[in-house]
Amino acid sequence: MPIWTWFGLHARRGTTPWPLAPGPDGQQGVLGLPRLHAERCDAGHSACSDCVAACPADAITLGADGPRLDYARCVGCQLCTEVCPRGAFSVSHDWTFGVRERSDLLRGGEPAAAAPQDKSEHELTAELRAFGRSLHVRHVDAGSCNACESELQALLNPFYNLHRLGIFFTPSPRFADLLLVTGPVTEAMREPLLRTWEAMPRPRWVMALGSCATGGGTNGGGYACHRGLDGLLPVDLWLPGCPPNPAAIIEALLVLLRRRAQRVHGGRHAD
Image (cartoon, rainbow, N blue to C red; front, side, top):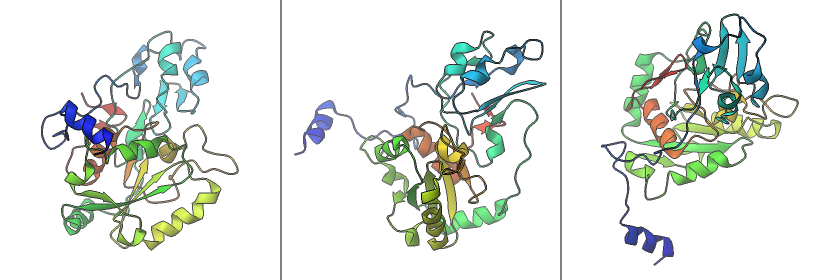
């Protein structure tokens, strides 16, 4: 018997009933992405821009109406919460950030116009019916640091046991329903990524996982690296985080499958 199996039996810990039933999600006490309280900022009346200078991912900008936070680029470093003298940024336990529209990840200022959708809600519902209760995922690492991959591996441990939800990873794009992409898309991985997408049968979906894939993270841009999937592929679900935890990934996948309600709208996390 493997030693880790023995430890698990000895501790009497099995698969959590969450999210199918009440139970632990494994994220108790874990910090999420920071919250923005724009009304506390007096940037319009002072020269303070400490938050902008501290952000390593260029996720914060200042406008005439105060600060704006792009969660698609935020890496959750919490530096903005440490340097803001007014408390406009605060720590939170918000980790369920899976959204269908990238514009829902922008907090502050005028809401961004939603990009035109390739599929109507009726078409998406019809596709879901075709999938039934299962989903096969092809993962492509497009230049990540492997933090997201570590969290993806945790989905298959006994605690989360992703397969019980009817979601499986497949090594071939020919059998995949969902293309799950991590990393900011380096120039070397751009063509393999697009070829994987072209090899997938229809209907097919795309999920951008991690702040590198949703907005470029700290490494996006430049001559050798794209700023994530925006403009490259038609993304159906955006999940920021550096990295997003296993529970956040499960929650986002269920949002994609319309088995869970989206919790973030206009950058506001539902309490």
